[in-house]
Image 1 (cartoon, rainbow, N blue to C red):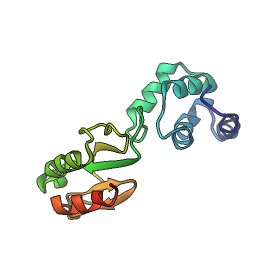
Image 2 (cartoon, rainbow, N blue to C red; image 1 turned 120 degrees about the vertical axis):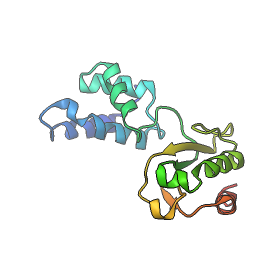
Image 3 (tube, rainbow, N blue to C red; image 1 turned 30 degrees about the vertical axis):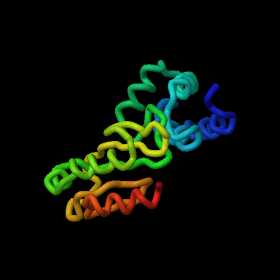
Length: 156
């Protein structure tokens, strides 16, 4: 069982707030990701399916649809690089290349040492200060190769 007794108790209270038990799945996925390692493992999905009286494929369908749910382990530091139109026009491809080069993480993956995960994001609402990335929940804007090197150098 991947779900702890504490989470099961929390989810029992959660489902009382909804007209249908299954409606609590998304908040439960968030809590599992927060408390159980930063990602939603197949075991977690199976346990949630049992708890919410769903098929595992239904839980997977929800977890895989929303980009905020991670279906594989993440690095210690997660770098989400905006690639929407404004960032793209202002050089996000070069920022992605620089981040991957400096971290050793492949585009869309995690470095071999588990320290960095690089992912592409859609609009982060920082279009006037593009290109940008989100590093562990903190926006870094108006990036260029030197700024990226300085920011990531602090984490090495």
